[in-house]
Structures are given as structure tokens and as C-alpha cells.
Amino acid sequence: MPSSFLHNSNDTVLDLRGVNKVFDVPGRPPYVAIEDFNLHLAEGEFVCLLGPSGCGKTTVMNMLAGFIEPSSGSILLDGEAVCRPGPDRGVIFQSHDALFPWLTAQENVEFGLKMRGIPAKVRSETAQRFLALVGLANEGRKFIRELSGGMQQRVQIARVLANEPRILLMDEPFAALDAQTRRVLQDQLVDIWQRTQTTICFITHDIGEAVFLADRVATMRAGPASGIKEVVEIDMPRPRERISDQASVYHRRIEDVISAEVQAALA
Amino acid sequence: MTKHIPIPVYYLFSVTAAVLIWQLLSVTVFPSIFFPPPTQVAETAVRLIENGTLPSHIQISLQRILLGFFIGSLIGFPVGLVLGANLLVRRLVEPFVHFFRFVPPIAWVSPAIIWLGIGEASKVALIIYTTTFMVLLNTLTGVVSIDRNKLLAARSLGASSLQCFFFVVFPATIPFIFTGMRLAMGNSFMTVVSAEMIAAQEGLGYMIIHARLFMALDQIFVGIICLGLLGWGTDTVLRFLIRRFGSRYQPVA
Image 1 (cartoon, rainbow over the protein chains, first blue to last red):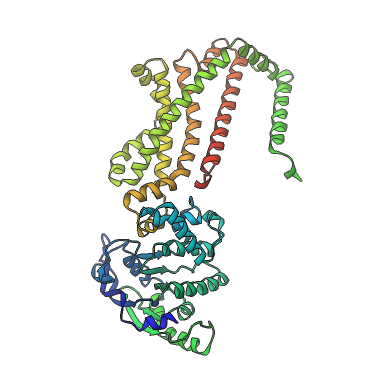
Image 2 (cartoon, each protein chain N blue to C red):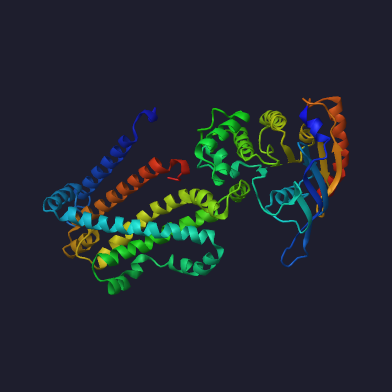
């Protein structure tokens, strides 16, 4: 199991220290979305960020991606401050509207390589390799609208992997899929993760999904001024069962941690 | 059952029925020299074709439309892209866009003739004016309505601002540009006829207004039928070209 081995190494890929995010709203007091957020991800680690809706998960993701800047604190990728979007972080969006419908699946996967001026032949070979990795070897010529929702999300995964990012940032990537497809994609993601040994930061509000996928589950407080509440280590062997005594113990434990936060979010 | 019948058969049926009703009404209920039956209109059309006037009027009008349409599209499309992509330029130009879009081209006929003369330039300029606005406004709408996620994804995949513009903004806007061009084609027909009615020696608009002097309704009907058929024809060609060369951009056509 490469993950458990890498998991113990101290090789930090992503490091968030004392991150704050304050939004200035004209005519109203500033909104403190994130306060003193601390988290680190080790090389090859799979971390799920779990929290009630509206707690600021996506704000954290947008800062990691470099779409917005933290108000204070530091976000370090391999020791260097993140300040703008870049191909070293592969962002996977919840919706397929992030894909380019005027391009085929393969052209979508080639996009990042093309922007960096990689020759067409290399681009095409690389894209085919990553399409095969996500199980879409035969769908490369199809346009995005011709693919199912699950396939579209896999194109997104292949598209960022082709850039060989240091980390995958996934913002509820399977939330819009039906339960059956979601399970298949969760299995495939674990498979891809183990084969590529990429570090993954995965946002979800689904405890079952987090327990099945993650090495560690970082739970967040309800907003405003949200931060990490507690990090739960999921010490279960892989391949994992979705339903097992062990899984339900973790499930219940995380539920206890966040139920108070959910109440607060609804109040 | 209906799906086995080709669409043109429906068209042929309803058009034949309409012409028959027209014929019937014009010889029985409203027999009048001011309501010529289709047979008489057809005779006039044949006469106008044989003496060469109709083909030359058509040619002149079509030439004006196509020239103005192409130049207008070529202006409207890049200007719309820049306006959509650059907020500062947009804020500066917006008042003029909102103002002039409500000024119909026909309102400009007199200044156009005074400034550019009675010849081709004034008519083509008016068609350029109407086409530019249609294409510009639609392009602008397209740029402004791009999914934010597409731009974020492109940036995070390593695209520079310039690359985002050429590889995301531009292709994402193409369907809107196509729509703008089809709308502009319709407006070009209205514009050219208006302009030709007010000041011209040739063209379908001139033919129609000139026939009025002689109460030659048959000739007016010939002109109207030609406009309808030409408009339908150019739109069909445009749609075919969009489907042929632009299918990957999911045209709205």
C-alpha cells in the first residue's frame, strides 16, 4: 500500500498556517469567512475536508487554487507561497461547466499541455495515456455533451492529471452524480490515486464518502469564522468496504464531531 | 406516421393551399385591380424577368446587403469581444451602445445621403450600422455570459490572460456571434428596403416604391415575394454554413 507508507513521511506538500479570509461587503461590517485555518497535507496523502454547507469549504478551495488570496496567514505548496492559479494544483470542479464543450474529450485533456507549448504529438500521446487511466480510452473523440455526467467528471480528472500536478483539489466533484455513478467514481478515484500517488485534497459534505476515501478527515466548524475543528485519522486498510463495523465507528465519531456544527449552521 | 413524409412536402402543401385561397379570393370575393390574383403577379414577374429589370434590382439589393453585412460583422465581432473582455472600455462605450441600439437605421437615411451621396455608399453604410450593432451586442452578451468556472479552469490549467481570451472567451462566444449574424441578416433586409424607398434609382425597395406611383400592385407583390424568398434563402445558406463549419460550437441555429 503506497499510501500508508507515504502517509507517515514528513514530506509536506501543502501547508496552511493561520489562514484568515475576510470579505469586505460595502455598507456592512466585513464578513470573516475563515479564521485561523491550519492544515497540512503530506506527500501522497488523501485528505477530505468535511463540513456543513456554507461553512467556507469552497472559500478554502478557492484560496488553495489561487483564485482568491487569503487576508492573512500563509498557504505553502512545497514551501512556496500560493498566490495565483497554476497547473501545479489540479482543480476539479463540481460541475461539467468547467469543461470546454467546443473541444473533444481528448482536446480538453490536452488543453493544459497546449497552453504550455508542448508539441502536438507529445500532447496527443499524453492525453491518450491519461484518458486510458480514467477509463476513457475509447471516448477521446467525443465532444463533452456526448458523454455522461460520470464520464465528464473523469475527463476533468484526466485533464488536470495530464499537467502532472503536485496536488489534486477536488470540490465536491461527485455531488451532482447519481448514487450508483458516484460509487463507481469513488472506486476509480482511489484506484487512480494509488497508481499515480498524487496528493489529494477532497471537499465533501458526505461523511460516508469521506470515511471511504480519506486517510484523514478534517472537519470544519460552521461559519462564519470557520476553521478546522478536528482531524480524524481513518485507520482502515485498503481496499475498503463502504459498510463495515469499523467504518460505522468512524462514521459515528465524525457525525458526533460535526452534528453540533450542522445545528449551528441551521440555526 | 408523419415522420415518413419529408418536410418540403408539408411546405409545398401549405404554400399551394395559400396560393389557391389567394387566387380564389381575388377572383370571387374581392375582384379588384388593387388585389391582383397570383396568376397576374406571376405574369408580371415573368415580364420583369424577361426585360431584365427584376434580376438587376435583386442583384443590386443583394449586393448592398451582403457587402454591408460582411463589413458590419467584421466590425461588430472584434469590437464586441473587446467590449466584453475589458470592463473599462465597456463602461466608456456602454452609453453609446444603449443609445444607438434604439435609433433605427431608417432614421439615419437622410444624414447618410447628405454625407455619403445617393449612391451605394449610403446604403451600404446603413447596413453596416445595423449589422455592427446586432453582432456587437450578441458578441458582448456571449462574452459576459461565459461560465466563470471555464475561465477559472483555464487559468488553473496554466493559461495566460491572452490564452484565456483566444482559447476560451473566443470559442465560447461563437454561438452568440452566429445568432447575432442571423438576426443582423434580417435587419439588413429591412434597412436596405427602407433606404432604397427613400433615395435610390435601383433595388427592390425602389421597385416597390416606384410601382406605387402607378398603383401597380402586381409589381409590388413581385417585390415583396422576392424579399421574402431572398431572406429565407440567405438565412438557409447562413444556417447551412454554421452547421457545416461551426457544429462544435453548439450553434443555437
